[in-house]
Length: 339
Picture 1: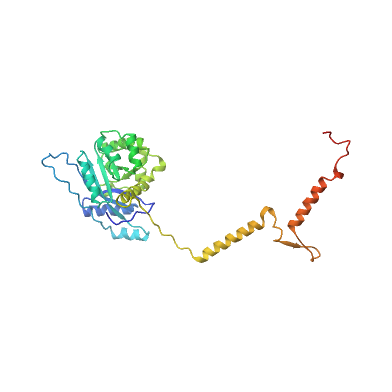
Picture 2: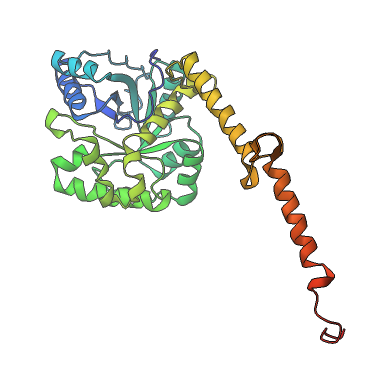
C-alpha cells in the first residue's frame, strides 16, 4: 500500500483511470488535473479465467501496481499556484465469473499493495457474496451489457451498511448509443434499491477526449434518478469515503484526518477575554433596566448628600402602594358592594 495520506474533504475524484501505458496515462492525468480533479486512482484490470480449460488454468499472479506518473510542467505549476496537488492511488479491479475468482480477491487483500480493491460481478451469486462477504471497497456495475440479475434491496442495503460503494462509469456512454441506454437502465435499477446512496461515478476512459469535468459528471445523475442533493457526492464525498474504507481496511480499522489550524496570537486572546469581562459587567450592572444599589450614585442639588437610584425607586413604589390601599381613597361604606 502506498504511503499517501487520507485526502482532505472537498476535492474531486476519479477512481477508475485505466493504466495502459505511461505516455497515454500521463496525457489523461494532465487532462484530469486541468479539469479540476485532485485525486485519481490508476486501475489495473484482471479478467476471469472462465474461458480457459481446466488443464490450461494457471495460478493467479497478482500484477504489479502502476507507478506514480508525472504530469506536464505547466499544469503542475498551476496546481502549486493554487496550493493543490494531484494524488495518485493504486487500484485493482477483478472480474468475477466463477467461484474460483473469489480466491483472487482474497489473495489481493492479503497482498496489501493496492489502495482500492474493486470487483466486477457477472452473476447474482457472486454479486451477493461481494456485497455480504468480501472485504472489498467498490462493486462495479457494468453498463456495456444488460444485467443478468436484479440487485435486491436486502443485498444492496447490506453492502451500504458495510461501507461498500457501487461504481458507474460514464466514458462507455460516450462511445456507443446502445451502451448508453444499457448504462442508464442498469443505473436506474441500482438507484431504485440504493436510493442514491453510496454511488460513485468514474471515467474508465481509454482516451484523453473521453474525460469530462466533475460538475458535468455530477449532472449525469439526472438520467440515473439520483436526488439532486446527492449529485456532487458521487464525485467527491462518496469517493473519499471509498478511499478511507480502503485505508482503514489495511490499518487499525479506522482513519484519522489531521488539518492544521492557524495559530492565534496571545494579544488577540487577551482582547477577547477583556471584551467578554466587560460584557458580563455591563449585563450585571444594567440588569432589570437600572443599576444595582451601590454601583452608581447621583449627587443631589446641594451636592452634600448622595443617594442611590435603586433606593429612591424603592421608596417611590412603597409610597404608591400605601396611597392605593389607604382608607381615604376608599368609597363610603354605603356605596361599597355587599359581599
